[in-house]
Length: 117
Image 1: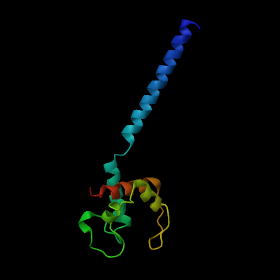
Image 2: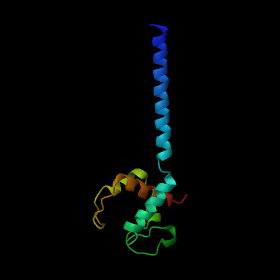
Image 3: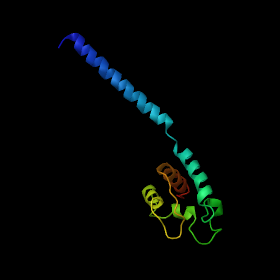
Image 4: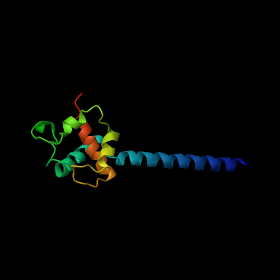
């Protein structure tokens, strides 16, 4: 191959890598931080869950019936995956909410933020 062909290939590869780097940096800057997601989850919990569940550590034990979010967060079986699966299934005594994947992520991050070490 001629030297100019190799130079064109090298420039094309460098440009491709630069585009990939730019896309990667752009997506990283646009992604919500977990704390932002947990805050959004708290707002969703206030709107959808607080009538039945105690949703904050300060209100733990103030209601009978459904478990509070702190208790849920501190169960050994509670993981991000278990919460997301829970949000996608119907439950006998709960309203049949349709929770979008992003909302499930936010609620999950909020509940897990209540976990005590």
